[in-house]
Length: 176
Image (cartoon, rainbow, N blue to C red; front, top):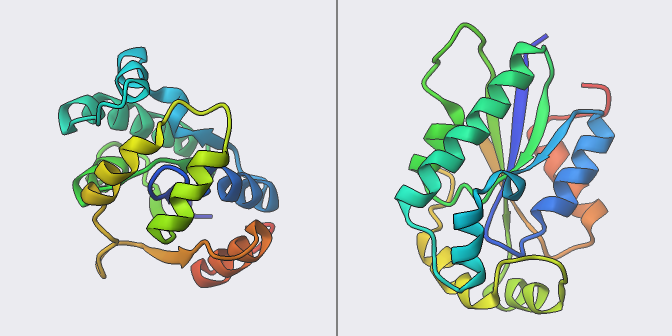
């Protein structure tokens, strides 16, 4: 059986955590919340409304890749949330076929309108990302390319419906 990591990606407020949790529960795969892996200095920067640079994100992305590889070495498919805004970030998560364990890293890009995402960010509680950083995230966002293994799904429906659409388009079924 092939080992897969599904990275649920998109800007802050797109619903990554919600959708990733539903997918992980349906598939009975372990899930990692990418934000939990940020070093404190990154969190402090974002709390202060300062966008992260590529240099800030590099070590964080490599840590996420290590988690993906560890799950694969254990023979587990997994789900992870990560903004994965740029193709170069997704390249780090995919790795370059490095190491003895092969894992198929796929992407689920959650996409919503600027207004919808902004409204979600304003109404949510308990997250360090201020709405002022939405513009910088949207500016950095590079949609999936045709060569990348993934799909883009609009988040203009209820989470269960978004998850249904995503899993159908990814060809994933409970028990995979």
